[in-house]
Image (tube, rainbow, N blue to C red; front, side):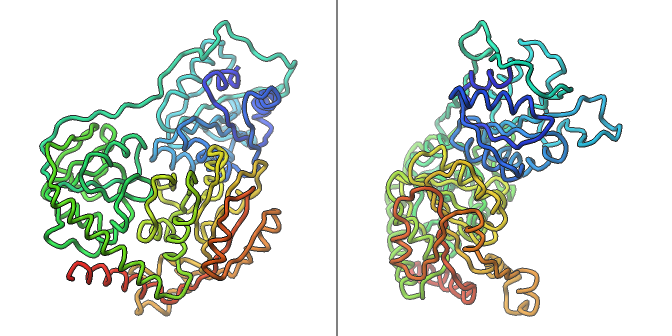
Length: 515
């Protein structure tokens, strides 16, 4: 009955981790798959499986991850945290022991109420049809992740193959998941700068079309190229805004926080009591978007001119550097992928490299796990996104991110996805932070750089995933031809000189401003 109601509510993808206590759900899901009602993805690692379901759900259609009781449930927590912070409709459908076995020493039994950090919809034992179906509908109507916990007693195998029937042709309770974006007249000044971070796609799209200059993180649309570089270098007087409109979580660059700290007016837009305001600089918060009363076209043109000049200078700087660095790979990848592609970008340096040097293309959809900004689950999230995308898909991530979720390569569905791994043998991002300063050289490699020497080719071979190493820029571009199946393209780079390159990048932008 639970699975039937999931199907009636439009669920098309379910990720299953095998176990004994969830056997009733497993049998029902397999039966639904045989009937062509849904696609079942079977994974052996709950942590990786949770992120696969997250990727499947990032398109806005709910996806389900189901597992057995005990620590299996706890392993879903990282994916649920990411879904909670980004509003992704992920449903954790967990099997449980009956509650009378809690705290009795029963095997594989923990208290699963609210164990995932979100309210638990607990299905009572022997619940009738209205209760069961209504609870499933409630779970799927919720924005963001939900946890449905189902206790089972033996027998755990089906007594017959009868598919449950319902007198209704559709869902037990019809719900509307569509969200509307409201705009209202505002008194924001003509020189307002828009900062876009991670948020609802429709709200980001509407905000990007208000007519003010837009600096957007890579997952948001219509941002000015190198916008974060301009902020990091410090805006000259003629580009400074009189107000800043913030939509979504802006977390990538320190320049964003600097411009917010210096703006007389900061209008933050977000869900009720959840507006983005990391530095507590917001002077106003709303759930609606402000409509501009007027624009300063001369000021907007000055922004466009600055971006054009900075873009040319940055390209000249990168062209003069030996290939590859992360900035080169981000620029070349975002230029080379075909129209209609999907690109997932891992956390740490890759998302910042795309932010600093990547092309901003309206014909490419960019995703990233920016909720908690962790490096975990990247391979699985990318695979889930690629399965739902149905077209050419790419992922860019660092070596540590790739290794962290290498279990994600153990996939029964292998979509057309090219995973580009920038392998600099360790934690390159720390080279750019305070701990990467020369005075910490004696400690850096041991506790931050953490070189691992892993053989990614051998790792991929173990999973029977095609793997190639590219050494030249043209070879890299050729390797990005529309993919057939799942493959890994490795680009080996050095971390030496990374700090100096980024220092030169900032100096280059400052020179353009002074020029």
